[in-house]
Length: 259
Figure (cartoon, one colour):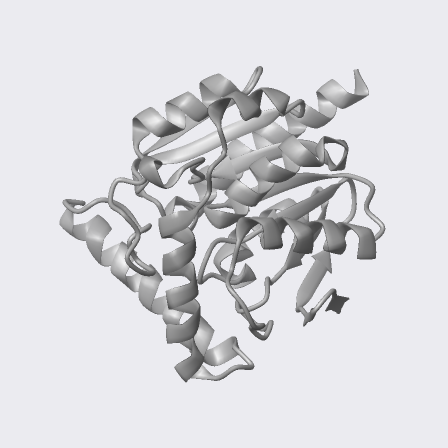
């Protein structure tokens, strides 16, 4: 489908209230496939691959959160969605926060997983893809799982990207700059988030627990969930647990809307 300045791949499945999935950096909707399969049993699920990710070709220029938000708004407009529930992971979670602040009327509810409001919230300064996977020192089995997931993400890029496997380094460098320089969301701006919100992170996330807690405390009425025994890639490491938590939150949010 066509967005301003880009042709992007997307999928729509299921029936019910709209839920829009926002994937992370150097990811594709394949990394959210367990969520698509679960949510589409109860909701109409919309999933778009951003330029430079998955099956969507890259475009000239840097990756910015402002650009990601503009793409999501254009996608909502193209799909004729006045508003939707948003489920965002990592960069997608950051975009979800910005949408809830600057386009509050478009957001029914928000789940932000592994998001940060400032680069200082990262455990280690981003130097490339993988630096957001989690802090060092994860137990052996968990570390091996993280490596396997990262290898799967690389293979997905090589298999899916219309730009070819050699373009991966270009996207990695763009993301490294993005994570080094952005976002810069003052915590006081989080007060503008009016939608029901769930902030989720892992106990071994690349976002510090203190930063995640400050985000949740800054959003009126926000819920906070720290998933144990997981890293930044919690959605892929523990998909069934994440799905159950998200489903419970969405059920509560939609029930509150009806009431």
